Length: 299
Image (cartoon, rainbow, N blue to C red; front, side, top):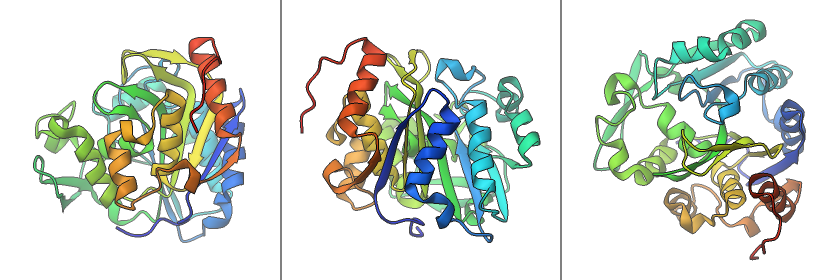
């Protein structure tokens, strides 16, 4: 696996009712424009898991996706690709139903359905499946963004940038819909960790507005906190997202494993957290989700 573009574990937490502005502020804090160049093929792996509307917290927001593309365009990369591989339906149907096709047309970005070929194949240090096909875009991208909603997940504990990548890229052509035919979900957390060892994420964008609590990843409750978590280290960014949901990394097996293996940082004390302090973000999210901020943050 190639190294991430920015190796330092930087995480920016911002809050704004205008989510594209919150994302832009976070990316400025992380220094993303300076990290990009005109030779880059930027791929945005977007969570388009189903044809539900963004207000359900099932999929990413249209307006925010447009804002991310427009922000990245300022760096004048060679190519910007929105890539998605729905596990809950036909990716192109999701694109049209939710209105992402309009965003792609308006911004001039390219689109790749990760459920379609041409494919390459990688081996996995994982019992079932022991390998997976991946769209050949994997060999072309030089800067990878994972953009998703923050969710409680009934199998993976929580879902954010790492889980979004790990389940978006394996194609339904091999794994079926909803990507369970080859055994991915039999040891889902180990599979997610193994995928993270093979596919780098240079920038994580995790929206908590809306986030999904209760029974995710599809049938939970959407809560609007106006918070965005962005990071140059996906393990670090997802660890901060986990803290908003009330979990330490030990409670999310794949984050704990990746932190222990040095793939990323899962100890908040070793991260550079910019913008909103983590304690304030935890209290703000708790107030939005549960209408109370009366809880103690264990440092």
